[in-house]
Length: 206
Image (cartoon, rainbow, N blue to C red; front, side, top):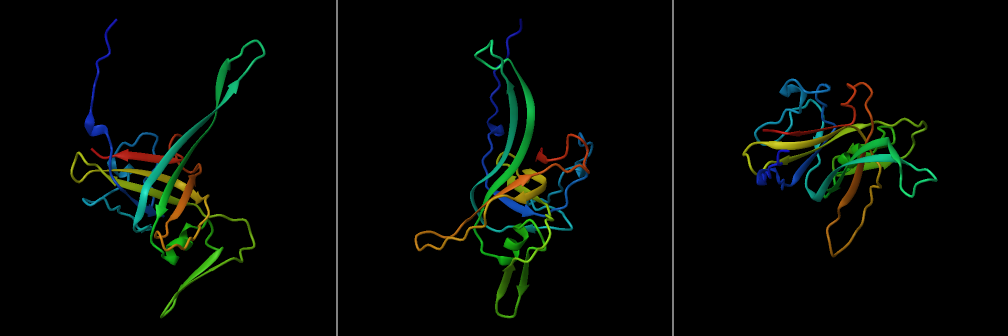
């Protein structure tokens, strides 16, 4: 029997702040990308090429993409431990801490365009909330892009294809610390995409 060789690759240890983008156009769907255009196109500064979307501004660490696999354990009276297991679900989300107070961006975080109205006036910004009569929800893409420390001009990103805000937009006023919006975006399956490419894409440029 062959021995398994120890391999240590410090370059695979990732450390970097992330930039947040919302409503970017998702790359073309494929089970296995066959060309780089089936991944997000980034320039030399890590800024995405997209006809839609916006940058969320300054954030506070940590930005946390999370993948959670849930399983159903199968028990029997004859055993004190589970005897088998079946897949229940897989979920993905991105948790982030946005620092800038920008009402037009905060409106975009809400899960329905009909739930609020943002207006830029000559001397003020106004954000009015409430009044939607139906149950419709609009999903958005949520993308975290971080710089690779080991290769200049290369990046890694995590993109949820269809996400909604699942945490409150809470405003806290304090003398001791600047305000931070702690937001949680949960990804949902996009059935228009190829099976196996329906929830999230993670890409590490080389």
